[in-house]
Length: 231
Length: 405
Image (cartoon, rainbow over all chains, first blue to last red; front, top):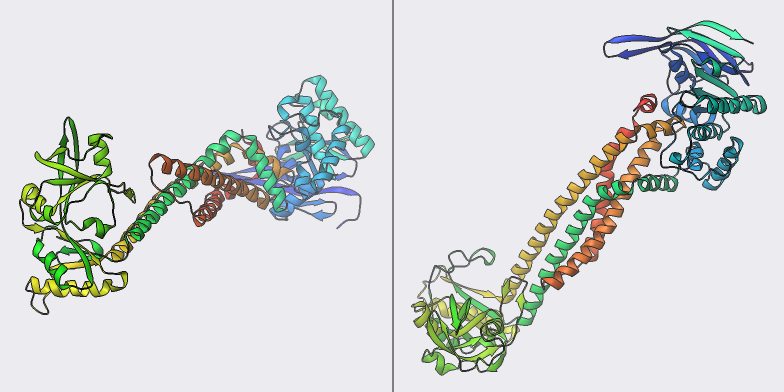
């Protein structure tokens, strides 16, 4: 166990899928470190393994081989319940398709993680109001998902990802479903969160505009890192 | 996630799709309603039978031909003709624990008055019949000993027959035709009402048994003898006396089987109550099947619901819901649905049985235990049939779920 300020340590991560009879090597041995407060982009064409890598970092999946240390704790071998716990406490997700609950208000969507951390209802509501204000949705808290624009929905998703004060936020093609103007607004939010709040953010994307706000980038191809950039 | 919070989550989830939730619960609602209504009908019928038999008194005996048979079902009781009017006379004379006797025959006949027509039961009975059965004549008189002896063509009408043929006009002294034979109406009976919804005692005509034998049936046999004991406490004694007298009358050798049987009204009452109870349980059982079907309906809809909400499950898992959280959320949804359905079903059942008792005139009785049982059963149905879909939901892989279109 190394005592450095590495938030994330990936050591030779491998992932093999079995689809029917065939085996697919999604990751062939990825090693990388991410420090607290980093703003990183994982890039690559489709099929490069970046989604797989994101799922492992996000504790939605476990590697077949290799180690993943989050805040110094090895999470690669934890069981499903423990992984769920970590997702709840330490990780926030932002998806391309927003993934909000339909027929639900922005407020209820935002406080969803707090439901699973047994936060009392009243406190959860307060926290949700606060974080929604931070992403610029003050006054919109009680609008339902279908009453929000794409950009607003993504802001709600960002608010949801932040509400439990996570160690890191994972965003998978966050502007993929938005027009360029709205996309820029969202990227500004990410930048602000990283600069002002020192939140560690990992962006998974193939869009250079998205990657342009990051200082570190890795490029994946066929399950391996082929290039690293550090600014 | 504690229980109360989960229930609130479940309620909110159900509320998001109110129509589907209602349709899911509909099976339970109808099932529980049906159980409550049918059991209350059965309970009411039983209660009514018990009441009627109570009214009749405990000193009634009933002699029928044919040997003692199983639990009141007389095998060949009607086809074996071994009773005669002389038997009745002998019982009257020789049994001191006996108060009155009335020989009895019966048939059905078309009854005609003017242009009115009615098909009804004709009972040929003795002059003491009203005393034995504790019925009162409303208008006119009952036939007396002489009328019976001479086989006069007189009759007494049950209140429904009276209403149908005469519609409020005075029937006394009028001539009606039974099987084309003219009879003079000398009296009408008070309204007695239905017995457990199955035998309408107001729909009959009473004539002297002698007349019935000679004119309507062409036989010298009688089909039964109604007997009243001097008092309720001497009924046992009367039974024994009757059996002794009849064995002598029928020249039955000692040790040989009786070719008749004497039934105590309370025996009959008991077996009638038992058969009503069996009927009630049968009806309740059938209605319970519909409750089971309701449960299967819940399971099906919950499975569909789970499939439709795969994305939602994935989202919840991605923010930290464990398998247990998902399982309980969906399980509580099923339980809440079935208990709410049970609640509405009980309401429907009570309304239904009240309606039935108003419309059909049957007495219904909604018992507390049937309500409690219905609630428990519907809760159990929710748990049992909701478990599989909830389990399936909890076992979803979050990555696949999030990717689901």
